[in-house]
Structures are given as C-alpha cells and as structure tokens.
Length: 162
Image (cartoon, rainbow, N blue to C red):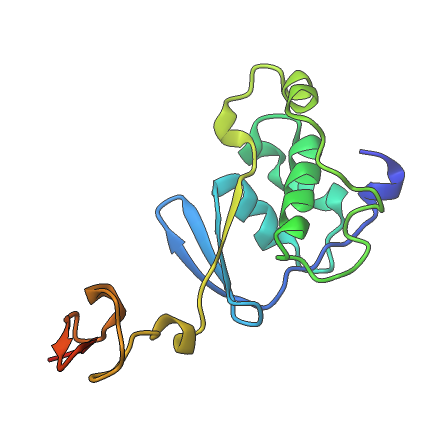
C-alpha cells in the first residue's frame, strides 16, 4: 500500500444492517439498494468509521485475515466504494480501479478464496413499485397482472376478476 493510499480515511454510509450467518446485509434506504457483504468485506466495512486510515484498518485486521491485509483492505475499500457503501471522499485514490484477479491472487499466493472481499448488490423496489398489480375490473392479459390472481372474461373484455 503506497503512502498516498495508506493515509486515506474511508467512512461508511448510514444504512440499516443485519448480520446473517457469516455475512452482513446492508440496506441503503436513500438509493433502495441492498448489499450482501461476505465476512472479509463486512470486517473492513465495520472499520471504515472515518477515523481509521487504511493502514490502521489493515493492522487491526491482520490477525483475522491471515494474509496480506494491505492488499485485502485496499481491494475491499475499492469494492465498497463502487457499491456506494462509503461516503464520497478521497477513500480511494483517483483511478482506484479494481486490480485484476490474477495480480491479486499472485500477491496473496496460497490464500483461500474466502479471504477475498465480495460485495453483491441488488436494487430493491420502492413499496409503490413493488405493489404494482391491477385492481378488480382493470384490463389485463394474464393472471399475474391482477392483484386477485385471476384475469377473466367480463362481457367481451379480459379484466381482473375476484
């Protein structure tokens, strides 16, 4: 980790979190996105309090990661930032692109793949979008469109029926 990146102080966004086995579920209610962090990414995210530098985080997690903590922390911070889980700041240097997998694996050598931080994101619809079915008597073409689950003939039209 270069001196330029080691002094950066990443800060996590305010979000709802739930631990689920070895993973951390993070919900960003501002952008309606949910993120699933594996154990490594979650450990780094918890340490991103805006006070600790990347070097501090790497030193603190060195025993838990049992590998090149600097590389893992740097990779985790880049992935967390790309997912929108860190406040906009200088948490990753400009041009902070993901290193390619081959370079990371060369640096980490015989480390288990589970040590590599993983952040999976998904878009969560707003309540209004999630409840987008047709009421009774609305024109329809299939059962899936109707809140009642039944699209039937009424007169000469297909409409949602009870």
